[in-house]
Image (tube, rainbow, N blue to C red):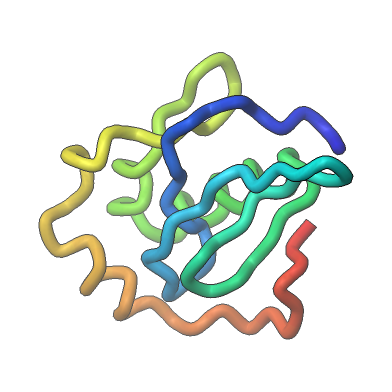
Length: 103
C-alpha cells in the first residue's frame, strides 16, 4: 500500500458523473480508497490524486470539493460546494471505464 492518508473526512468521488463519497477503507490485509456510489477503488493514492486533478481540470465546480494541502488534494468542507453540485455532476458524461479498479 502506498502513501494512503489518515484523513477522516470523505472525499467527493472524482469519477465523471458520480457525486458519491470516497473514503479510506482499511482492514487487516489491505487498504484502498473506495466510492460507495459508483464502486470505484484506488489502491494507490497517487492514482487517486491524479484522478482528482483530472476531474478538476474538466469541471471548475469540482475544485470547490478539494483543498490542496502540502501537494496533496484533501476534502474541502461540504459548505464550499455549489448548491446545485449534484445536478452539475449528473450533467457530466458517464465515465467510460470498464473496471472498478482505477489504480
